[in-house]
Image 1 (cartoon, rainbow, N blue to C red):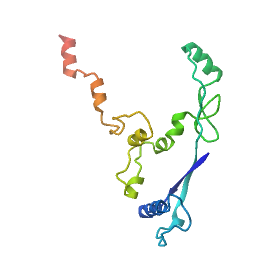
Image 2 (image 1 turned 135 degrees about the vertical axis):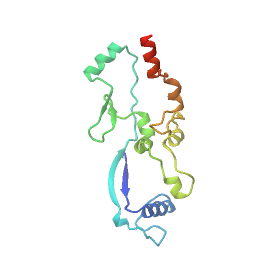
Image 3 (image 1 turned 45 degrees about the vertical axis):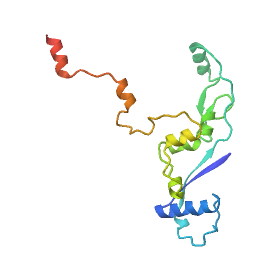
Image 4 (image 1 turned 180 degrees about the horizontal axis):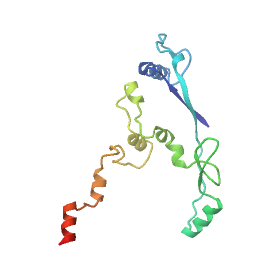
Length: 175
């Protein structure tokens, strides 16, 4: 099982230099990178979090059942999904492993809507949005995923019923 370490640098330039130096070294961090002029202060960086990354997923068979059978099964805690205590993942109650989607899209789920700045820092292109990364990893495309959360999307505007104005309601009530 691998680990993900989240480092926080006080300065944006230090973080970008660290990423570029690591990328120049083949993506492997060493204490003496090939670039002799390390100008970022690595001592100012601090470890913010260490998260375990799952590598094996649940392969339990999905049982076809009626809603009453499901209620009985869930009430007995025979199977289903629960939150594990060790790593905090949602795991299968039977085999104690996370779902396949969690394993395959772990980094995208950790980003939680934030853009991946790595391609922009390395000069490979623009920052990658979560929906683009999801599609690259084999997820189902969602054209509405990157829209602003408070502005109604085109899909929601068509689904919403139009309300009558207050004047129309009052006029129809008293006539």
